[in-house]
Amino acid sequence: MAMRMDAAYAELVDRARRSHAANRNPAGITATDINRARLYCYGFRGQVIGTFHATRVALDQHAPANGEAAAWRQRTNDALADLADLAMDTISDDFRVVISTLHHYHTGVLRVLESLERESATAGSIHLSRITSLFQTTIETISNSGGLPCTQDTHAPEQASFVVPSLGIVIVPLVYGDFHSWNLAWLGGDERNVPTHQHERGVEIHLGYEPTHGETVLGESRCRCDEGYAMPIRSQTRHGWVNTSEEPHHVPFIFGSLDHGGWGVYLDVEARTEPVVTLESVPRDGAAFADMVYLERELDGLSTPGETTRQILIAHTVTDRDGTGGLELAASRVGPERLVFHDVRYRIVSIARGSGRVRIAGFERAVEQHDHFGIPAGMPAELIPTGDTPLVVLDTTIQTDHTGGAA
Image (tube, rainbow, N blue to C red; front, top):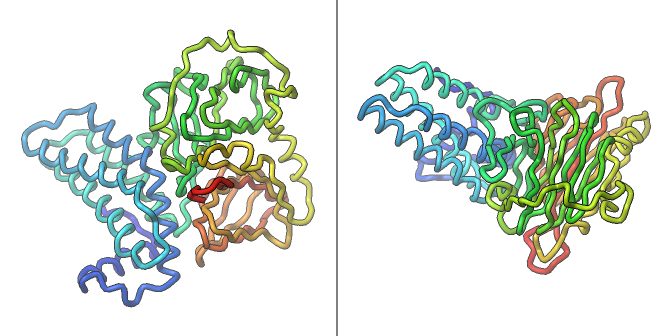
């Protein structure tokens, strides 16, 4: 089955093809082409621990039927590994993003699909057919997105997530930028908690939306959390979540590091084995959790009609230590005059309340609560409210005040 592509994507990959046919001649590639290619490439980058990883895991559960099938399987796995490795490459802001980065993503995806189809033709299998279909479905959320891939924190898509080996929890990648990412810890399976762990060179912000009933862990302390929260976490600081209710409580989180990128969430994890009950139980409003924000209260305060306003909930200085970078989290109400982002670093946006439209690089799409998308550095983005409910958004960047930082 042919991969579905929207018109802009199809035009970009055709431009790349024609460029390669002319010895990689960049003539004819416009600024609009470059900006649009960047958006698609960041969409693909988010699959580094999504379907590029999960498809290999799924294939490992089913041995090839014969020698020819094994050869096609090896080709599939090699292509998936190459696609994941592209996460380490810079997504440039010039013609190379069309001719090289997007071209490699596109041809790699086609190589995976072709290899899976050839293996299936060699030795038909309902398992292989389903694996192929799930891979293609995830890829088409990018190639057929209309130019602005959006993800939601409402579920864990099949064959598009990552199980952290040392913790046993499912991570759903939502948006992956240059040095930070927005993810979802999906806790609807056997594991209902976030086991205590820490990151050597990574920083985080854990988010908790109501209903929430449990204890959050930070450093040497734990506190009761029965209201929405946003908790900043410095590097080398133990943290976790203990759910005390019968219902799952999923934990969206932002991870960042100027040392090893947003994908370091699965490289830089050290499980802590000390029982949570041995940590000191303290009040939520005490000194140990002084930087934690009452998230739902902040969002409620912005959910009344009014002019556009943006307020920083957590400053980047809270988590910026020794060049790891610090995560800034802000909340905005988008009024009739709209909200425009235009700066020098990658920004991730989460729609917290209401609905609207987003415009980036000439692309436009509707967005609603639970949607997440990224804005590449240097690309203006405009948010426009729609509907009767005020549009309220969260946004995050990573930056540092330390000499030698990457942002």
